[in-house]
Length: 137
Image 1 (cartoon, one colour):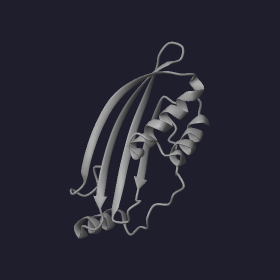
Image 2 (cartoon, one colour):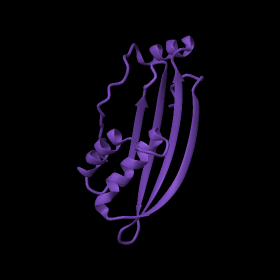
Image 3 (cartoon, helix red, strand yellow):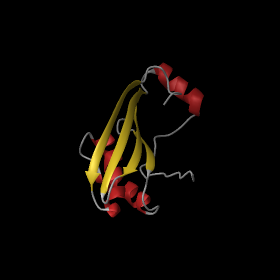
Image 4 (cartoon, one colour):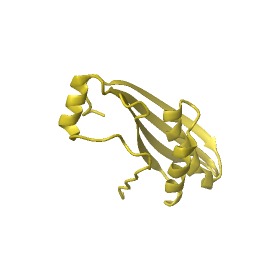
């Protein structure tokens, strides 16, 4: 997010959520928080299900960073970075700290489009399938 052009409009929010749920529901809760960033409070199912499925493979997640690029409008790329940290409570109580950074890149702005091409090269619109990268700790 630091490398994107200066014209980016961004917003940062942070909140701590205290949830009581079975351990098996934790991946779904984290996926829902990530998808809510894009859906504005109503998570898109096409994002929630694959993220939840991915997280379920790795047991109890303690931290998860999710970057979503959304280009429904060809003139704007929306970026949503959600950083989640899970603190284990007693039993089925979890404290989830969520920090969200969102930004928009206006591609109709010639200077922005030029700067993006300079930083990242030429590119096509992002594909719909999710892409996952796991960095072992």
